Image (cartoon, rainbow, N blue to C red):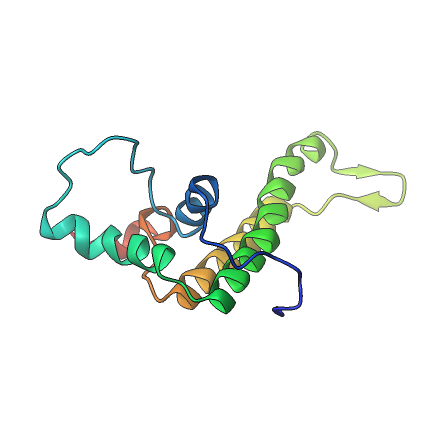
Length: 133
């Protein structure tokens, strides 16, 4: 993934921050001050928010490149449902593992994005075995 993609190096918009949060597995934070100022908020979510607000110009371009690469992977997963009713048609045979394979690829790139940003994958990217209470 190269910086020569023509993406802007301007600060991330609110919509772009929403995509970054989603793709990194973090939930929405809402639009109003909610008193989320405890140590848990800052440890788990604050690092991502700080990173999004303090990326360098080249990092902003790279972050936008990641979002542009991950978005079609998400859309492709939604398209899998069009083939769920067909197992084989003429010489074409449906990949029975298509949904799993696409989800794996989608999650792989989301985790790589988290790695680039230097934040742990959010709750949506953790398996139930990874969650410690």
